[in-house]
Length: 295
Image (cartoon, one colour):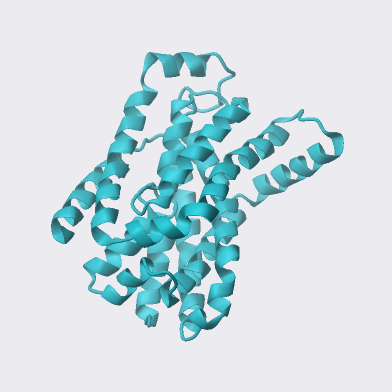
């Protein structure tokens, strides 16, 4: 089973890596393997296991932390969404953001239901996770390089600019097709080692957003997806798979929630002035070392 010490370590790991663009799924495979917790590492790619039931609680805690941090924005967005259902019109920035989030959620939601189990059992293993983590580093580097291209700058300049220090179009100027593309990009995060927040940010940067709004959209978009995935799998924790790990799940969730809240607070400020380069370097170095270690 899982000890309370392991629950705390994995809870902290989940809270941080789910939001940092370095892949929580990849780290939930690699870190237990590096620490010699092989039972947990193998359980990640099992059809069903106590470890997966435990991780459900951590995902719910992470989503709750995001809801708490962005609570004011979510109140506006949900209210705006309900208003559009009544008026059948999209008139304000909050109403448009609500539908952008809805559109971007659909691709990964459908694909996750269809393929999450298969991709996890096949690829949630140390060597594969290390390879995909390295690939994640290249994706982040490519995103930073692509954003500096003239066509992206021209695209951003054609729209009203975000009130930030870095040039970039306002988030609410994305069209629904662009939101759909960003949603499709998230599907890659079903592979252990590819970061959901990282690839979403790269897709946003490619459409002319600045780092601050790309990160904001990524975190808002992650909230319903993580929460829905956790709630969908919650019966696993409440059923036989959760026997013997529910106490550890509560403790791990507390640490995951606190770590996620601190992480999102840090990252929102970080991306006001910084970019994805440090995380790209981390993924390249750690991923390459883990490929050597587990190959």
